Image (cartoon, rainbow, N blue to C red; front, side, top):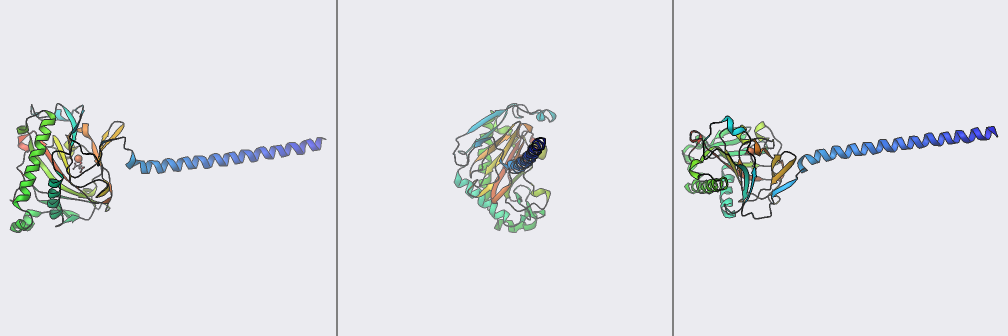
Length: 299
Ligand SMILES: O=C(O)CCC(=O)C(=O)O
Ligand SMILES: [Fe+2]
């Protein structure tokens, strides 16, 4: 009887231990699975953590304006009353630049950038200074081509840039309630071409979060004119405002103008382009006349 009892209790013990082992193994597997899922989610999620879309690529916006409280960035610079932002925000419009104008501007970008191009994923052409990405460096297109630059760009190209610059300037002045005559075009003003080629130098790393006022100094109002369509011409490459606790995106669309005050109230980044080619042009304004530049022209 005693023997029977002890055999039974040994069996029970073994069953208990096996049960515990199975449970431990399952728990271990489960924890491993959750960890792997978390890792995968965070690696994919880095590009996918979009909380709100301010402008879809498929919609045609007559104009959207979102006010955000100004940062203190403007206090550490000389103030120009009636121009230096007191009211900050961001706006998007598809009704200022036509798709046809965007297409013509894009041809200028394609033409210029076809003369060079970075080895990495981001190339620029600065129409004002003539800087063009070539390989791992930049060349001055105007110096390099001299008079032959007239075979590349036409008066009409510069006229179109000027026309677009003027319309964007009026749009910004109107949205922020300031006089357009107090805004001055500032440098750099450049076309950008981005693709999924791996970066070769720091200049190719266009995806880092930044504040334009810090990066470019003279900027008070930044504008971006998109020259290609998200999900038609390229994937990835959305513009992201990185707000506290939320990411807000602008999906590029040819002819879409996105503009915003350049301080840290508008911290932003561009997602990596996954496929295709993305074209845009950056046109920015300063309130400081000393930082103003003339429209690009043949030099
Ligand atoms: O191309 C864009 O959408 C933004 C580029 C940008 O942030 C910049 O040029 O400072
Ligand atoms: Fe920027």
